Length: 67
Image (cartoon, rainbow, N blue to C red; front, side, top):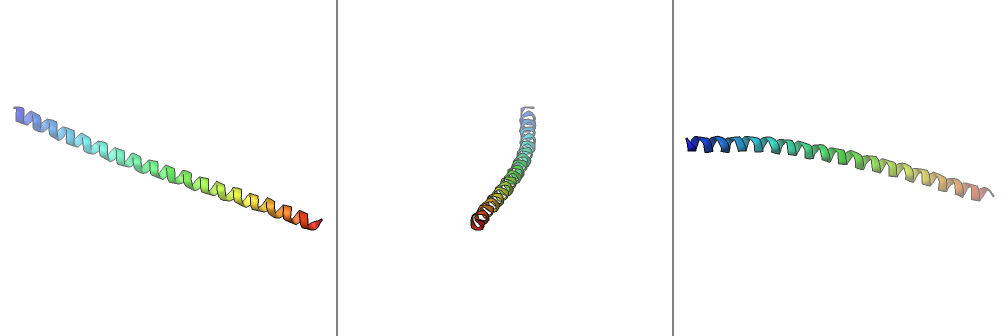
């Protein structure tokens, strides 16, 4: 009886552990995808800001040479 109880407890713990590991792995994958999306958005924002700054600088140079 004790052997069967121990076996059942061991198998139950292993099956729960496997399910938790799968959920943790999927959650980590989702977190990485979200972080990648955020990094991509930040890079796009930085590129836009750089383009705007370059355009303003070009306008200032153009204004200065017109005078």
